[in-house]
Image (cartoon, rainbow, N blue to C red; front, top):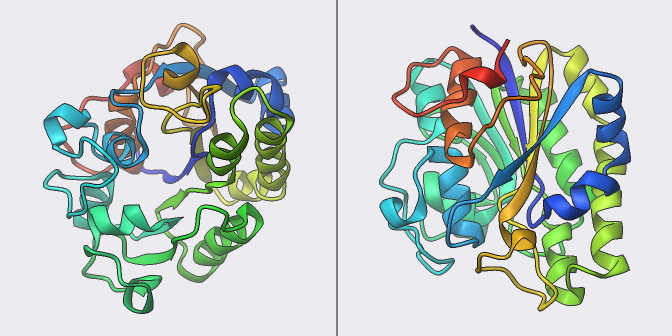
Length: 268
């Protein structure tokens, strides 16, 4: 199995909102061309620990990335490492914490914001460092990387949903509308990416609560969506993927050797 993959992490998107707000993505599901699954995120339900969990398959208590202020390179093998070692091209348009986990830490904007270095795990990158950095710009950054470098693996990681949740809370029009806007922006790219042969996974790191935060065990904090699109997916409604299986599942799609857990039922 050798496919190119785009992983979209909609930061801070609760499953509770995803299941009604993502009209374009849900249209693919309704048409039988995609599938929506519910995942429970690992604990703690915080961003940097869960970037590490998604991208390495290792839970925070085992990775040591246990809160957002752990600023160091990961000591785990990430999906970027496996892809690079398989001779594949990697890219990311993402929050700067992703660069700190896998490329260089601490982040230095002048050096690291725009990255192109074949020796790094994330070879080509546009990394932002303001939570209100517009999702519209982030998706354009990502597609620019796709067009310039034709990466086999591309991470797309916008932040405006999480930013709206921290400012206004889960049960707010601002949070719901940020999710809707991310879906509208994805509508500009999804079919183009599919036509280019990419397999697409859309998920979130964690959800959001009404206290304008996340870190606990409430369903709205832990339950996140996973939507998969592309010919390599089974779309089996009985599949039960786990957040810790995303890294290995992506490696399977890429045809990259790995030693991570993965969800067999998710793939065709």
